Image (cartoon, rainbow over the protein chains, first blue to last red):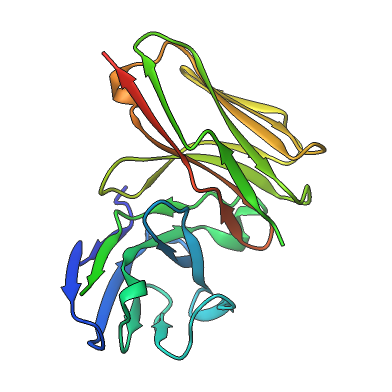
Length: 117
Length: 109
């Protein structure tokens, strides 16, 4: 079974530029998550999708971050414009979601390491 | 607001030693607690998931316990090996998943 795929693996941009990350979850997983992991910290949830609807985006800085999952499969996370403090690893995860009946193990992709100069 | 704390932040042990990593959380209302391993430059690998009704889970040399009432979990690693060197994260889930900052483990040959 293929895991969660993410691209690119690494990205270096200058502040005020735009960047986009892509995630392809495990086939059949209804729930998709984007996390931000700053160096030395644990991952922090940015946004959670159930199929193509947003379940939780309370910690997403909506003035500069946006995410979509139009067909309920792949997802894109965008930052526009980027700030120095956005330097982090962006992790995508997926899970079966409500179908799992409370057992909601998340499977993580390798992440995209973003450096903002 | 759920806060998750992991102690110690870093740990270095000689090969073969048994060790315990600690995780504490402030709100006992959780669905489950999960321990992850993270290698440098890589994503998270799930090691053990303990549902709120369970007390412990075991996988090979790993044993995780959960005491929900006291807001504590431990990850026990037996007979540590250099390949166990990684960062270990615990996370608790209710409506979302909250992570600790991790314990960076180094096992020296």
